[in-house]
Image (cartoon, rainbow, N blue to C red; front, side, top):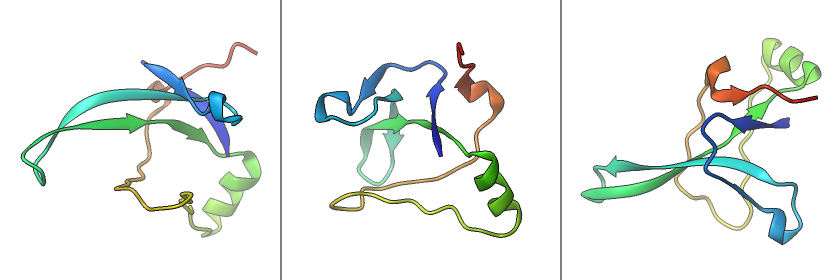
Length: 87
């Protein structure tokens, strides 16, 4: 998957740890499980053509996390969620 620049990005994480920078959009949301607000961080990922074909042929989307599993969700966004590349 290629990293997309999420619309309304509020920052970039990972560069100081030596990773490719990941543009993120951070917002506060209501967290009913903890009776308060929680920070939600979103990023955009763009499947390559090979990955798109694999998904169309039934391949799953795998979520990987290093060290531990934080609360996570996957969803399909819209074209408006990604800023067009300048290239």
